[in-house]
Length: 234
Image 1 (cartoon, one colour):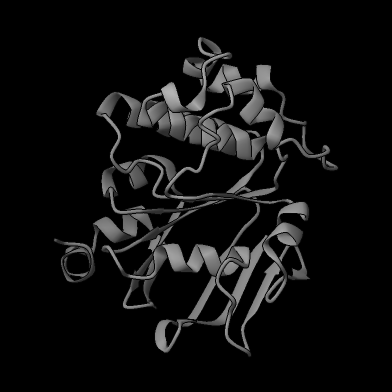
Image 2 (image 1 turned 180 degrees about the vertical axis):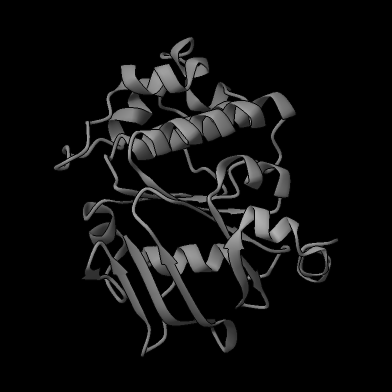
């Protein structure tokens, strides 16, 4: 579903990503692990076109090369992005935020509707007419994911979905991600919470200083404490 080859990216003269190469299978959940500043968010932004990949990079989404395309073009192809800072419309209600994200249905996938989303995010169902600015951080995170799903994506990029959330909301978020995966979507998420990652991901890729240092299953990672200590410990 997603194939990344030789991905380099810069912020000005700062070389952030170095030869990132990753594969994500259809229906898989891949988690990008690493400390703050490792390059996880930049990887997602480069996939989405928000950071321009350096020449020579290849980012293929469902067989189509998307490196160098504009973000709105990539979104229309069926790639959804949930940013770390949420960016909901605070003056719009939950229902209005969802309508902003609506895109046509895609072949082979059941279209997302507000009622279908409310089954996954019951908190939102109780506040359909509440403005986004009067919601908690966890509720806003749920709304951001739900709004992205209204675009009927085939792959979703989730940037730090559990960051700063209360444990009960983190539990609900893990259940929601499992439900989205069960619906047939492919998911790439960035995380620092290894416990959360174990609950939702099939495989992990560790990024450190913009370089992919390790890939494998979460069980394989647990069997390598030296890797965790070297790249994930605070």
